[in-house]
Length: 224
Ligand code: ATP
Image (cartoon, rainbow, N blue to C red; front, side, top):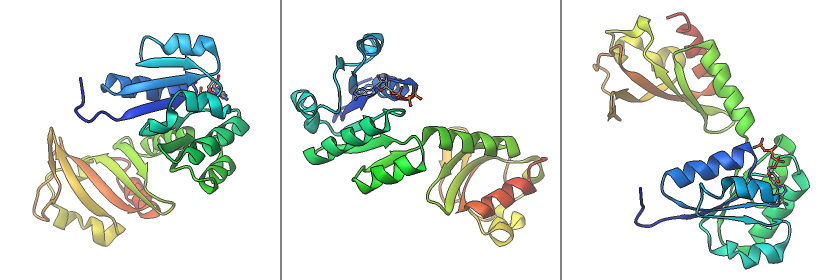
């Protein structure tokens, strides 16, 4: 697969997370520069990405010589070595070029990253844990995305108790304060569902709301 306006990505740190991001981007057809200070790690990824280089990302000169400031997005996927993660982010921020996405090891690390100007801070373990928790409460929950501290989106298979009913009858907004944003049916996505649309077994609901309200809705339908 090739893209017309290909974004250029660099991923620093080839642990499990960084490797997975680099592989994902690469298999979607994007150019990826993979960087790790450990030569064995760069070797291991070299067949999967456009370029794989051994370099210490806390060495500003090393990063400059790789032309990192010309990349569109740099993902910093160094977890355990928090100092290296912060230093790398600072150096990248100083270059004033790419969008900087950084994996945080914990909340405090995340706060520091935000303060020093990371454009996006991600918490893969926390987010995946939350998704699994929601799926465990209700197997109907297919995906769970935290939008902010208060709001989330869930993707939910239509529970049995909703089969054949329409949105008006279900009163999701009145009962739970949540909004059905879209209904997925096969490959089709209805992004402005009408209150008279009847739900079927194959449908998937995309619902937005306050996280506590969404949890109430999930619990109300957990057995069906
Ligand atoms: P995961 O959970 O995704 O496996 P992790 O949180 O355990 O990752 P680490 O093992 O700490 O992450 O780091 C990931 C990678 O980052 C390692 O392969 C390590 O060699 C690399 N790394 C650490 N510091 C630097 C650095 N300064 N420059 C480049 N690579 C680095």
